[in-house]
Amino acid sequence: MSSAAELAQYITLTLALGGLQFAWSVETGFGSLYLLSLGMRKSLVSLVWLAGPLSGLVTQPLVGILSDRCTARLGRRRPYIIGSTAAVVVCMGVVGWTKELAGDRPTLVIWLAVASFYILDFAINSIQATLRALIVDVLPTARQDNGTAWASRMIGLGNVGGYLMGFLDLVHLLPFLGSTQIQVLTTVASIVLSSTVAVTCYFTHERPISRLQAGTGGNSELQALGAVFTSFRELPDIIKRICRIQLFAWIGWFPFLFYGTTYVAGLYSSAHRSSGQSEDELMEQGTRAGSLAMFVQAVSSLAFSVVLPLFTYSASASRSTARSSGSSQGIRLIRKLRTAMSVSLPTMWSVSLALFSACMFATLFTSSVRAATWVLGACGFSWAVAIWVPFSIIGETISGSSGASASELPSASSFAEHGYEPVATGDIQMGAMDGSIGDDTSEHSHHARHGHTNLSAGIILGIHN
Image 1: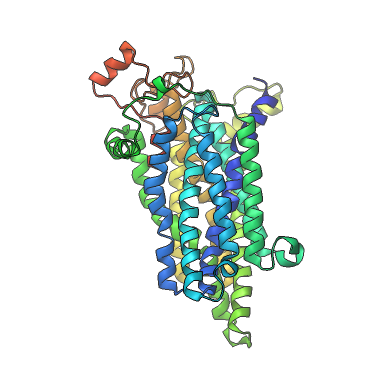
Image 2: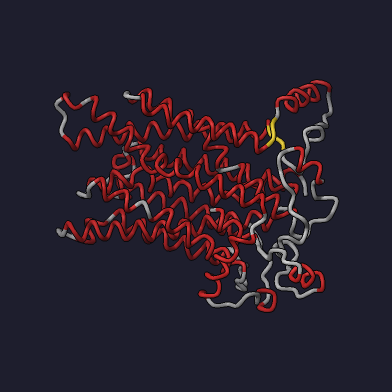
């Protein structure tokens, strides 16, 4: 495949993740303030955002294992992507027009908004699970790192677009899409998500599997749910370690994403309380300030997502061999300098987590909007790594164990040198690339008898997510 064709594949394959992040940034960036504007107490708003972790805990592993067994003509992942996108569009519409739908019944308004956000979170998690699995399914081992790097860039673009839209006065710019800011935001988010998903689904081709290939472990939802929980024990060690790190990292990321705008808005309100502005004016201006801060963070994250992959190397490409070729002396010199400055993916992840921790501690001593904006902007580095490196390591591990040729797989010494622990071929039985799911070959039976795991991309990424 030519470099131009590879670039086109990366863009079309990961574009939907950008649209999904656009929609999610609208929810996380403005959902809290919107619920507060409906009259909900702050203590109850946090209960609404339990939908995120709850839906991630159940939906992503369940959708992962169900999509692994899907025998639709569209493939395994795309039916779930399309169906979940339709659910997101409906929920976005309900969120934007909650007051109009519920009328003059404040309690019904709040309950309708809360229900919409819960369903929205479940649908978004379903899309994310299948889009991430689609990348692992389609790309070979050697291109998993590039694929996840492009995914992080698309997510960065979605973040920038979402927070930029929130900062602008959309009612004046796009009055035909709604009469309030939240109505225009949800409408634009629905359009962006639908169009990007359409591009990804149209240009990405999956190989349908037969019922015989899909018929492993039972077909009922109850059996699938049981398989999800038993799969926790069968995860390879490297993926277990990643999941443990993510468990604690996302204890910090969830409040950052859901309350970043609210945090800055609160600082703005406290600083301008004596200015004579009404509470509504303070909330509106504070929301703008919070949106601007998160926009700075999104731009920072996008910039780092473009630059950082140039200074890292993965297990499938060692420091000595990565990017070593060049047609001129100047290019070779630049590549030598870049190689000398590059670090492994686990090292980059460790640095990003340390920086994120320092930034979160810094909020204890931050009292101005400008300082808070700088702190959130610095987190752009950590966020760029968070949405790229873990998925890259998992993708390489899964793809490298799913039937790649020996010449394509990184060597054991390469894994050990860069902080990876290789998963023996056969530890993860997959048919994403060669359609071998459920194929009862003698080799498959051999691994089953010896207790090897029988996990696929959908299950592993679902459990991780």
